[in-house]
Image (tube, rainbow, N blue to C red):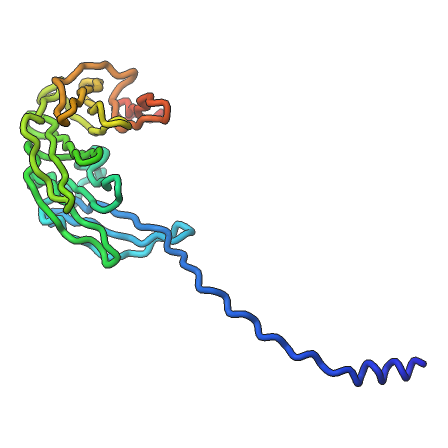
Length: 247
């Protein structure tokens, strides 16, 4: 009986192996990262970002303007702009807007599969632009040098910028303001500027034509207000550097 079973097993035909299916190619490209070089020949450095957060250099793209770099050999190294929002995306992720602090200009670059293309370079309406903000078709710049101000532009469908007449307003602190950031609130009805030196937060009410009111003075809760953001309920959350002191 055992022999018969063994023969039966031995005579059973081998199954035809099935080919292993070829897995579909996986696209791990998740997005891109852009960094402003702020060198004399200013440029935006692009990086591809995969799904695991790894970055791959994708080249540098000229802004057509000049940055304001730290002199070589400076020790300790410092951030010459000391700001937030020097390079921003529009809400549709079609255009990048960059400050050129060394040439007092704003650059617009369009985003494509092949990289970035320079669209426009315009005067910032002041001296040493350091921060930008966008809401719909409005762009505002924070000019830090000379007599600091905010100045507005309209954004064309092709990304070009047109100065908005009557949009320039000063900062409360004047030449001593040492500002850090300008930004819209969620619905574009307010502009906010942080002043590091005076521990102030300036607010501007934006009317239906995109024009700001005179600045409204608000004291910050702590020293050296710097970057900020609005949370979902619309509260303003501010980081305070306390003069750069450790805490």
